[in-house]
Length: 165
Length: 192
Image 1 (cartoon, each protein chain N blue to C red):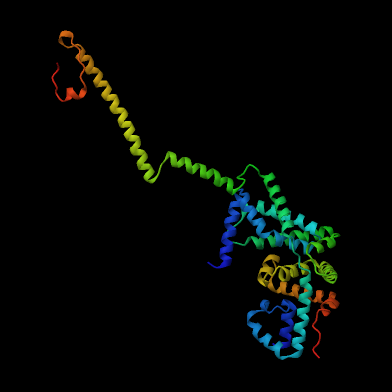
Image 2: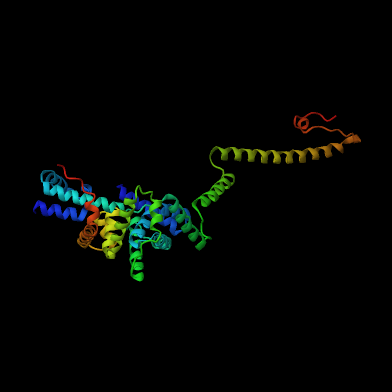
């Protein structure tokens, strides 16, 4: 296709910003513009129109955008306040749950330690219960020995086979 | 994963959260996209206040649409451009005329223009833009101002690439005609 016509089509559609031109045509057209005075003049006209259009660009200030965003969020929250209101809140309650889960279902070394402690405490209580029960029984038995002599002996002595005096 | 695939994946995850009522995920999307929705609305409707109303309606639609979002189909930006464009055109047709903001001068101050000449030029460019037929205006807003590619523009406008190219050529030709004095004033002085 004639380079003049092709340049005209490209400038009409895409303007003078060559980065927006079809890649396969870019180099040839730029070379044509550099070599041909009329092509260059048409390129400069397209560039001037682009500059003109650019003045019509709309910019939203960050303060305006922030206000608008806040209004939108207020509307949404008023529509459906009962749903999860924020990821942060969900994360917060999730953190609480994780804490409780750690206590109820300990993991890792904390689990081993806590189970060991629990069994030790339980064992001591059971042991004490057993010991105090048999000691009491034996005290009663000794109390009814011959001659009414009441002697108290420790369980240890009895176990070691010490003579009853 | 390519960057557009990554974006789509991120968008799908955000929309899934929004569909479950996650306000924070929704706020992320609003902050990411509100600027471009307002910009398209302003240039289509010629009126910043109307554009703000439009933007709120668009974002509410997004909130309600989240539950039926189909993952892997589109990016949030494409969906927002399409809904914004359609709503803007509906409003233009309902109102029959678009009105340049009476407070356009206020808008000018807000953008901190350097000179009165530039302020006048901005008003003239926007008047020319508002005088275009709706679809020519839209294609110029999407392609030229928002920087969408030809295929992205055709996807948003739900038209073929050929149809979009034809619209774009007519839109630029119209703007060139309406702003002859203005763009000729920007030409470099001929070298003697």
